Image (cartoon, rainbow, N blue to C red; front, side):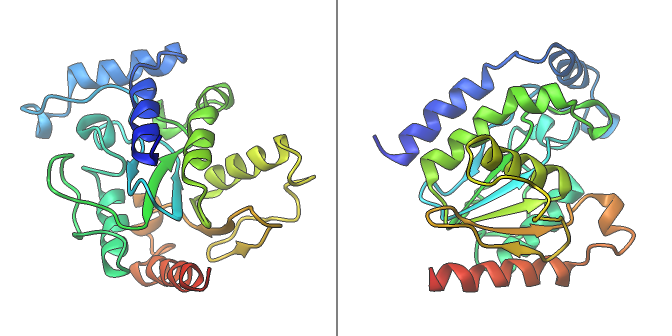
Length: 231
């Protein structure tokens, strides 16, 4: 079975998921009440599947859908300012077909990259509980199994700990301690494990304060691009 078929099968399973009662209640309430600016939208209000190239060698791991972003549009990092920031950088480094991501039918495609997440439902205050991350972990693990990427790009410390937790649970690393999170960090692991790259998350808290700039994010993606060419 092709990667595209395997991902489609997985995504159908993700969309049906109701493992976390707190998140089910929250995502559906947001979809019903809506934000005034999006009152005419038909909110997605379900778990958000992965998005991108089914033959990608780069997997980008985010945190969770935004309540009025991906929870509204149904596509990762689509419809909010974090997505505006990320997709512009992906476009400028050749991974995305356009610099904006407004809705899931806007024609955007990714080349060589696939976006996954540690949690697939919008959480209250953007803070999924450890038990909710545990419930969702098999989904991004399956993304990794299907795609067998050469590089994983984590956005933020939570995503990095989640990814390293997978490696530890499989016995592929002994501890998370040798892999501290910092923007621009990258770590090599024994083959066939992908190389790990890290960035601050493109949240407004980071981008509005200048903690993460467009140039900083673009530079990490360029480093990833160079690595993939050699790989």
